[in-house]
Image 1 (cartoon, helix red, strand yellow):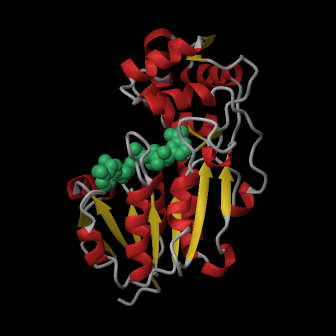
Image 2 (cartoon, rainbow, N blue to C red):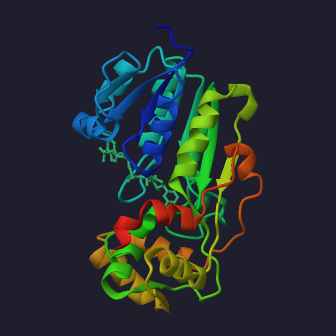
Amino acid sequence: MVYKEKIFIIGGTGNVGQALVRSLLANPNVALTLYARSPAKLQELFGEQTDEKVQVIQGDYVNQKPFEQAIPGHTRLFLLLQVPDFDYSNIARGFAEKAYDAGVKQIVINSGITASMPWRSTTYSGVPFEKAVLDIPNRKAVVTLRPANFMSNQLMPGGDADNAKKSNMIFDTREPDQPNPWISPNDIGELAANILQEPIEKHGDAVYEMIGDPRTPTEHAEILSRVLGKTITYQKISEEQLYEAMTKQGGLAHTVAYLYVYFGQYTSKRTPGLSILLGRQPETLEQWIVKNKSAFS
Ligand SMILES: NC(=O)c1ccc[n+]([C@@H]2O[C@H](COP(=O)([O-])OP(=O)(O)OC[C@H]3O[C@@H](n4cnc5c(N)ncnc54)[C@H](OP(=O)(O)O)[C@@H]3O)[C@@H](O)[C@H]2O)c1
């Protein structure tokens, strides 16, 4: 079988990556290579792939040799990194340089909305991560996704799903009427899939912010009450309480937990034009909760 595109995916087993992989698996003209620490996890998620459409390469961020050996022959790369202390830049540059050297013509990177926030305003800006790829001499195209608050954050230990289950409450530092800029990871994965299947010239070096369904905490509690069939109430907590929950129950590093506290003041409207990029309306918070209802009850 001759495939028109060969796409390499780093991060395919996560919230965003699963939606991306499922979308690309449906295209008969695309072959995929999935880079993962655990091939068994890939098999569990996507079933056993017996034909040449899907290849699995076992590897991690530190030893990029398996990546270097496997990347020749690929046309595009999706790059999502998950580093506990946000130290993405050198890892990103290593993968991207090797990819462009091997002939990759487009890289789609998963950055974050912090790259759109004022420079050096908090513990993490996505800008150095983005620049690590942008600054590569003679590079080819790089498309940047800047999603805001993932709906899947509700599933973090000690997060909304746990609290709705245990105490019929959800907690945050936001005022009850202050919108939280939610985005579904399914939308991020599907937008990446669309870009990776469209002409490279169409997107060039575009940057796409992604806020799909901003909802206030009051609306969030109403949605949960409706979907779960029981009353869920919102309680505003202090920044110190949120930080403690993130670090002690969630086990997050200081820089990540502090960013969540800081981000509690960030609010923004729905991103204009997302439906053009997705070819459908963005997934709503209610639709995402309905799909993941079992985690909340
Ligand atoms: N959460 C938010 O609100 C938010 C907002 C904006 C941007 N972001 C960014 O989005 C990304 C998280 O996306 P996500 O939720 O899809 O992540 P996720 O569900 O945690 O998945 C992370 C992926 O990275 C892989 N991975 C982690 N460490 C690895 C390593 N050492 N070597 C190889 N692969 C490794 C995981 O593979 P395994 O199967 O091997 O674990 C998995 O495929 C992060 O870069 C984050 O900064 C998040």
